[in-house]
Length: 614
Image 1: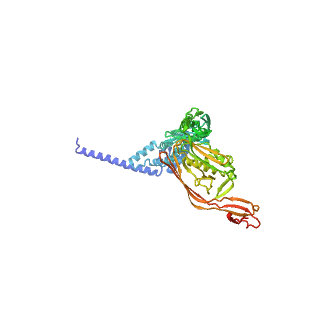
Image 2: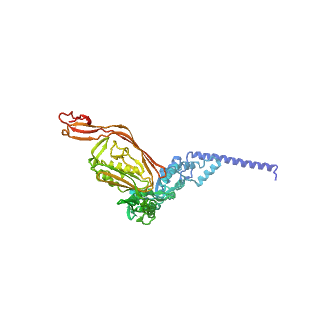
Image 3: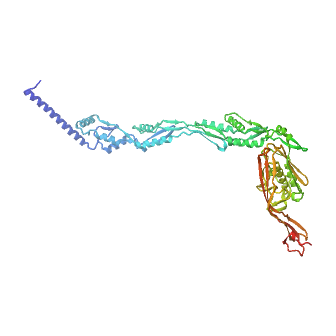
């Protein structure tokens, strides 16, 4: 409908009047609200409470004082953090737990002062009529709380400890494992914050969940491994071989074994085979019975067979394996007190049957004799007959070496030797040398071996030439500490040979018997050069009665010599060609002569051929 005329102007006036009234009310409300706020400037408006405590008309300081007077003190009390049965206390005061006074008072002072006149007057009227309560709130130092809770959590945490094994005093001992513990630190902090986010001053306890971490190696695993190892050396092990029983002490077994960790978190018992092998070698040295080769002897000048014997020896590898197996069974819980070691028979290299087949072929291969005169120089023959006895009957197997000192030694009184003469530092020591004079024996053996055509390994000429021996083919023996001069040769034939020694009162003979292989032996004539004639000197002395003599040194001519020996096989092949070079020194003889009153002074020397004749 459209209004016109007076009615139209009436509506406009009414509308204007309404708007004017509304504006007036708005202005009045704004003026009233502003005035009401100014009336309570700096103070809380009437009807306002905080947490049920009236703070109307109070300024900020008074309002806070009133709140602290009435409300419970949130700074007292404590938070107990419990992890896996362990408690730790955090006092509220240590983390700054308190009412959020600034926020609560700001909220209280802001009521009716929002800056919106309509909203302000509405709020002021509502507060004046019905009152208005500001919500209380709590605050704390979140960083302090987090730090304390994390520290407590970490103190409760622990790494899992694997079981281990130690070996005090040789006994294996299991060291137990221990569970570990893990705590979710972020969750722990969140639980702690939730527990104190309230308006209670009472103590509170929270339970922080934790996770148990199991060790990779358990106590049971370690104990089982220690038991296995201790069973191995719990008692001695008796080993039997060749009818003899020996004991391996428990302490020895303990030293052989060790525990070795495996990738699966377990241990295995390891017994070292090396020390067991050493034990077997020592045991074998006592219990092995070496075979004896068949050989030959002379029975009333006729060759006869000496029967050989079968030996027995511990089988090394099998013995080690047997002991290892026994100790392994012990580790697995089987009681093993002793074992029998494997023993094998060892046949002689030269059997009785082989000797019997060739006995009819045995004959004298070579012989050499040296004449001597029993005297103090050779212990009145003892130092010649004794080594002959020791060497007599020696059998030299094919490829074996004969060493004079090894066979005839040791050169001791206990072995039958006595004092005699010897060449010491280029001079003849006429007595007091143990074994002196035995070179007659060594030279005789050497010459018999030469003529049998065997390989000569060692020979040395005397310092001066002794005319009882062939030129260039003598052989001396000398032992001084570790320095040994010997005669040695090798039986390089296919058959064993027998050395026979025969010593009578004035001669010594060595024969070598065997199966001939028809080798031929020849010698060159000795080449002699660089000769120097010796003489004997007389030295006057007051130590002897007048006219009495005492020989101190014999006279020996000096020269060099060379003798060549050639040995050929039956088919003409050259087996040996030896050149024996000898350098014999000249020695001036010396005889002491007791002085007469008219003789030259003591110490005077003259050649014996220049001595005045009475």
